[in-house]
Length: 342
Image (cartoon, rainbow, N blue to C red; front, side, top):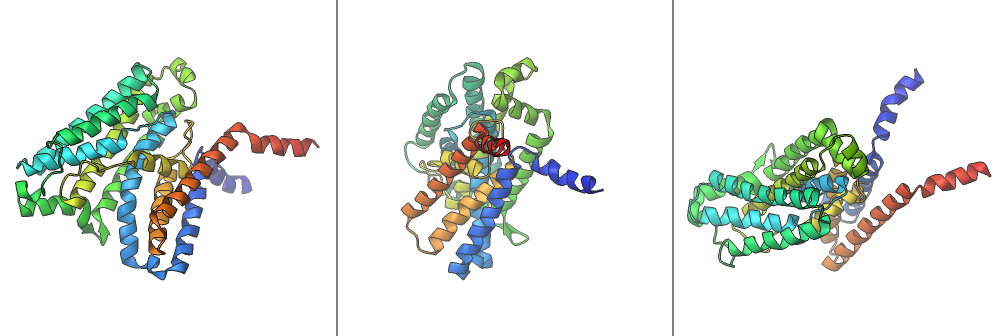
């Protein structure tokens, strides 16, 4: 009877990356309560709603980056694709293009970047750092060029005030059941991509090439197809975040998405997704994004300078990566076995 009761817990804890996710969630609770004690306004309903909305951007970026980290790759073009998404959609709408058509055209452009990244890394075998750094500059260049090297006018100037407000409300300012739509968009996409990663063959292939790419090839896994799918997820998430930033500002900004690729890495790594590949779950990314935003929100509310905020978050990221390296190297196990032998 005891074994039967323990099996579900053991099964959950045995999932690679679950330990990191649980640790991140525990850390989230501690950090949130600590900031709340210092400044009770942190516990206010409005602050919680704002925190969830702001966290959503980090979660979406984190999902895309986590897919790639698990494959053992990275995407440095994320922030530029965010900017490209915001600028293309805003430029089209200021020219009177129907918002739905503008969104579909923008989606196509962003997915093209994902396909190119997948081809360069999966087929041409370029180092992901180099390949995506190249597309990072290309995508940012498109963001600048699309509207003549200037930010766009208000999107309502082209599609009208009513349509402009509908677009902004759908992606940012509106709410459903008292929670901002931005959060619902992020959660729905989180559930979809969580299912794809944990319950489908594509998800198994993503873990396989991240664990051992040569073994994956021998097992019949298409590295090109799997890598391209992971980069498409990253491009799609960046596309959505670009629309969110466009809706937030009511216009396109050429500098949108700056360093968002690093935000994605931070969300994943803090939540236990290994930058060395093969390990991690999106529950950890959810926790990591929440930790990141809670730290940013809490430090801001207690009056900490921006430099201090970045310093604290940077240290946490480095510590998370160091712990991953130590665990993978088997240092803890070696120490344990040495004590047992003695």
